[in-house]
Image (cartoon, rainbow, N blue to C red; front, side, top):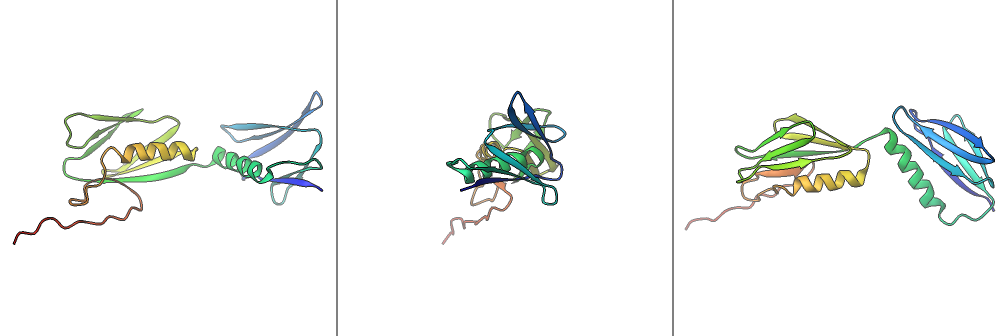
Length: 177
């Protein structure tokens, strides 16, 4: 029984197959990053030019071919593309100032809050709109949650930080009789 793993290559990825000292390597690279995979000698490698796919076929039993295939394709996707999340804020005298490596948040508090990020891009589009971009989805989610938790949306006044597609429900305040 043949077990096979299909690796899809994006247009901006290049592939090189290297055989050195009896060992096989697959090197997938773009302009800025590269991934190097060691391939066992029992595995045959086929490349389909029209579909831009690498097919690895093996006669030996592989435990989790689906997991291996998805992780390799995910790594190839993150070498070229970015994930992004938008953040909006609203409120009186709320200010966000961006420096080179930090973001200062002024939300009517007694102290200034700083937010720093690593391996991600932060771009301020408008006065009240920020975009976070990162190649790693887990790092992006952590940074996004840390930034949102600085000032959650007040349900009565609708002021604070919120995500792109968050539904806001406004609560009605006290009514005088």
